[in-house]
Length: 127
Image 1 (tube, rainbow, N blue to C red):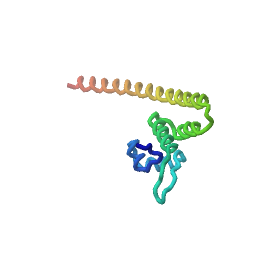
Image 2: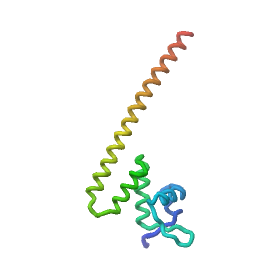
Image 3: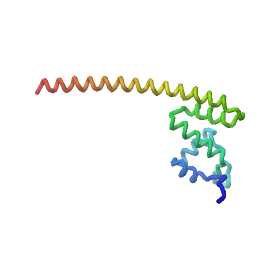
Image 4: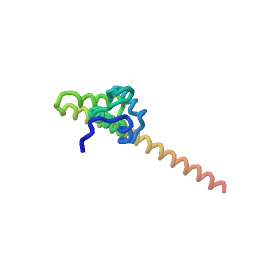
């Protein structure tokens, strides 16, 4: 069975469980650059790999600019050490941001619990 070297927008949308609109968004952002066969978009292996990386970055909560920067690095020179260092920096910054958000959420939940307790005590005192 020959390996597929090109995909339609529908095939990629099915494979990655996303909408064609999402793929067109990444095309508008310059992350994928499909060829045209008449009115149809034709995606090559590079486009598929870039889309996969973009979706992974999105799942991690990275900003579009960070995703684009990382993807563009993979198109650069073959030395991956600078790419990996930059990726680690981005991941560390993102982790710190998420940990700060988690602390904020935990503080808010603690305050909510205290307010709920106070409300219950006031209601119990009226009973």
